[in-house]
Length: 243
Image (cartoon, rainbow, N blue to C red; front, side, top):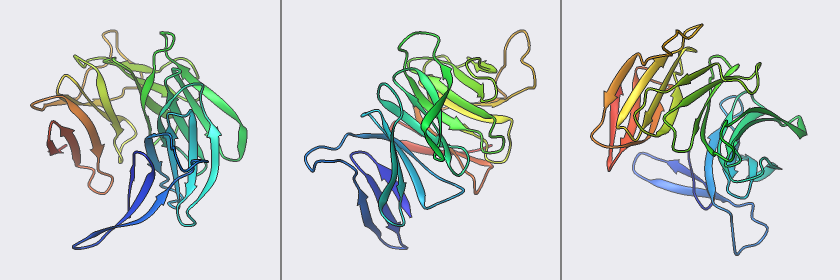
């Protein structure tokens, strides 16, 4: 199965010689308009569950086996730009309201604000949850060269800020096999791998390694099946990088 999001959440079945659209999941109350989806995340622990985020301030949790909405939450005060699963029934989201919030499906009436951007109304664009150590998350701010590392046990105060990019950061991904490594990529054409120390030094944290593409990097993925490989997307190209 392959999932994609845009106007709706779509599920595709990929065969040896064909790709077939098997379902279009739409939770709009009217047939005339559906608020665009900004992102989605597939639940690793319970693969029948996909969470989506939308510009209409909501996050929607789908049971894709049944093709029904499990729950829909008003997650933020403004557009929700990204969503990431932690545990089976716990997810986080980031928004144009500048906050990182955590939700537990067992208590849908409440959420926990983990972080708020220091500049008022500065949107947070990306969120990545460390699957090897669920205490840690990473987020990026709009038009910022920083990757902010958060410890959910210590809300509001980042444990580290990775600020060696020369332009805005567009994508982040934790290493699937290590709790201490994260990759970031941005408009400076660089993909940086970082190793997070227990305590940051006086000069901050520098990258462990760097790759330079020929133009701005828009997206990256760190392969869980082959953790020695990272994929980056820029211009009209995709490249595979050996870690």
